[in-house]
Length: 499
Figure 1 (cartoon, one colour):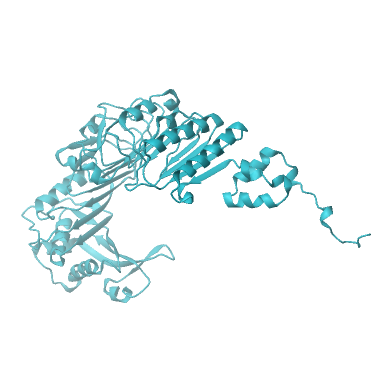
Figure 2 (figure 1 turned 180 degrees about the horizontal axis):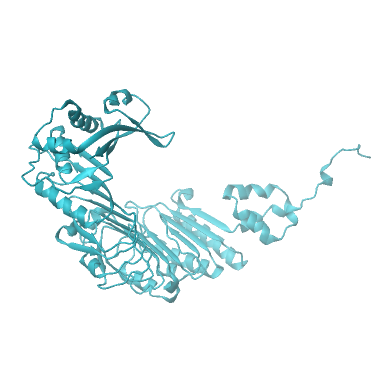
């Protein structure tokens, strides 16, 4: 029977995809989920078993409803089949949610990893959901699988090609296993190492990793406050970024960190006096947050190319920089005095810090959460003859009665170009305090003799509202504040012009 002109029948179609080489079909399977891959079995006869050779294996004990033996048998059978047929496994995902890796599962995990290493596994992801969230007893064989390009454990462990990246997160690993691993020859090329919320580590020495560029260590304060805190020594001149949170940190005295671009320290339990003997010729960003041992330390930082210095703490540190080649570099200082900024001596010490930071552009924030409402007494000589220019001054106080005292103290040492920016929805009390004090200048009613002194230096005050749509500040009169309280604008600041 002849078919009508233009009529189409299935016999005319050509299954060109099924004609593709097997390695290409396997590659197609790689980009499909397990469920999608199974569905391809109904496409045609050649596709019936292709999904069984998918180069991504994904197993979860949750699918076996507590039958651990069946879970283990299925993984054993599949891995043996891939091994016998010399099939490629690009990725192997394993989810264990029924507690930590005990001795039996540890043995099987070690066996599976060895098989995968022979097959030529590139990416291995282990998610072990335990009560405390840690992967326990990671087999040393993990570090010996040379074919691995990416390894994820729980949150994330990453081995990239030729072991250039290592990221351990929430992994229990002992000092001896860790140092044995990083001292092996494949680790000679490692460039990035990140240790995040790991347990078991007490001492980390990375001084021999000559190609290490990026290093970060982070743990929780609870672990840091007990005997579990870790001690770290760093020295490699190849380092470009170092980020450390909650540990003991030691720098080799006289070290030359010629490549270090950024140094971030948070909650470091060390005096850090070794920094004064080190050279940081490339350092652009230095961050020091809640490093309490700095209270008894005088630091000199030899960083001629510094661009940003950031500090948060309960006390005023003693830090100075050598001659800088940067024309415009900034210092962002957040002070949270534990007992309040209660004396002119405290502000004089702050003035010393600002002076020691040279020609920096200052962003100064003072947050007083104390219950002291006695105010600050500015003694004779408390008003400096030479004031530091501050780009932005932010003041917050739990008690409105101390706000004017804080502002007086700040004005005794600096001349801010701006005060703010405050959030109109959250900081309305602080905003109204600033407005009330600055409006005294127009009314001629000063609070005290000292206020009269800085009022004479203040030439003009303007209110600025940030317009996020136009990405700019709109300038208006201070008295217009009430008109913006119920608007879509979020941030405001007070622009000051001094004589």
